[in-house]
Image (cartoon, rainbow, N blue to C red; front, side):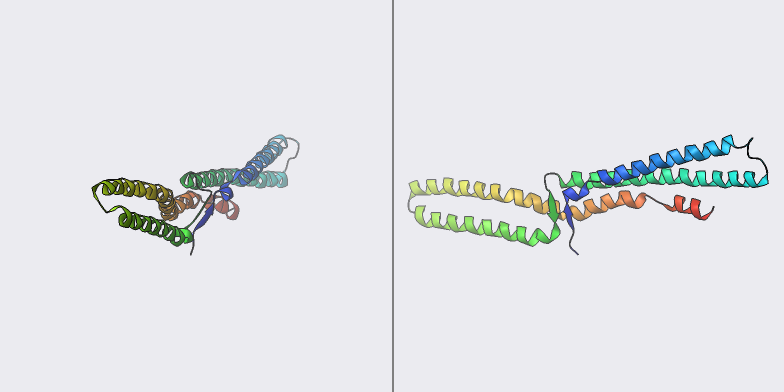
Length: 188
C-alpha cells in the first residue's frame, strides 16, 4: 500500500476551530444547567424536582467529560499534523511509490555523466598535458553529478522515513481515548 502525504492536507485549523466551538458551547450549556440546579432548589421543590436536578447533574458530568475528551482530541490532532508537517520540511508532497522513479532518475544522471566522462577520456588521454586537464575535468564532472544527485537522494531518504514519521504522528491520535466519554454516557 502506497503512503502518500500532501502537506496542504495537514492543516487542521478548521477542525481545531470546530472543537473549540464545541468546547465553548459545552461550557455555556454546563453553566446554564448548573444555574438551573442551583437556582431551583428553593423554587421547585419535591421529589420529582429533586430527581430532575440529579438527572441534570449527571448530564453535567457527561458534558464535563465531553469537554475533556474534545480537548484531548484537539491536542492529539494538532500534535499529529504538526509532527508530520515538520517531518516533511521543504517537501509539499511525499509518496513512497515515487521511489523507483527517483532511483531511476539518479541512475540516468550517473549514466549521463559516465558517458560524458568516457568521451573526455577518449579525447584527452593522449599525453601528460591533456591528462592533467582530463583529471580536472573528471573531478569537476563528479562534483556536478553529485550536486544533481544530492537533492534527489535527500527526497529518497525523506520518503524512506515517511512510514516511521506517519506512525509517530498516528501515535498522538492513538493515545487519545474517547472511552471515558463513552463510559460517562453508557454508565448514566
